[in-house]
Amino acid sequence: MRVWFVGARPRTLPAAVVPIGLGAAVAVGEGCARWWTVPVAMVVSVALQVGVNFANDYSDGIRGTDDVRVGPLRLVASGEATASQVKRAALAAFGTAALAGAVLAATTSWWLVVVGVASVLAGWFYTGGAHPYGYLGLGEVFVFVFFGLVATVGTTFVVIERIPALTWLLGSAAGALACALLVVNNLRDVPTDAAVGKRTLAVRLGDHRTRWLYSGLIAVAFGIVPIVALPSGAPEARPAVLITFAAAGFAVQPIRSVLGGAAGRDLIPVLGATGRVQLAYGALMAIGVALSG
Image (cartoon, rainbow, N blue to C red; front, side, top):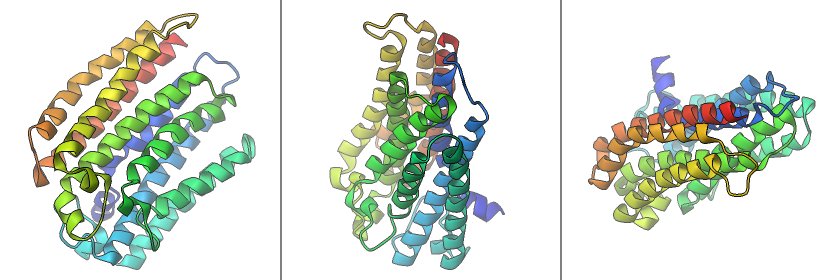
């Protein structure tokens, strides 16, 4: 069980949890809220994240691109599990996400089925199939769209069956932080990915520019805070949202490490630190938005 837990890459799960919390926070004070949908949406998001992680483990493992790796345990490459076992785990996680998503679609809108199918296909073909788009440097696009906009906006929609403009802003913030998590992961793997022809965005940009991209993504998330708190032309401000800036303290050390040249195994703690930035930002932003609702 420990091996499977580590193989699921729990440090990436904040990317699945934060957008659900932000989407739910938008619904506070909007009326006609169906709060039972929030935990169901959480199941969808977390199961999708775990499914993507196992699918990547499987696809990269059978291609041999994980044979030399400095990051967290990969089940197929390490021999801790067979490729077929990891594939079944990925399909089970995707199936769980699909079942929970079907409940939301049946009680909200069947258009959510289209979104769900797109999410699963995007998760599988990130590193799967003959031409995985993750090998072309498009992984960040997937993460921003599905673990930023779709997860946040979708949560708000299933709770109140409307999509306020605010939820798009929060989805963009969640997407930027989720992308930062992927970018630092890929920064760590630049030498090994380049050697096996895996052309992630980090490989394409190179080491120096990728480090600034990581810092820029975190800066974008915090740059959204005053826009949410003090929107131009809005009937009322949301000053409580400014408490989100307290999460900036969690971002100092990982940014310093990345810009300071940390590489290889030294970037593994940065992955966990980035997850803590996500969680702190998400919790404080959600509280601020809910208090303003």
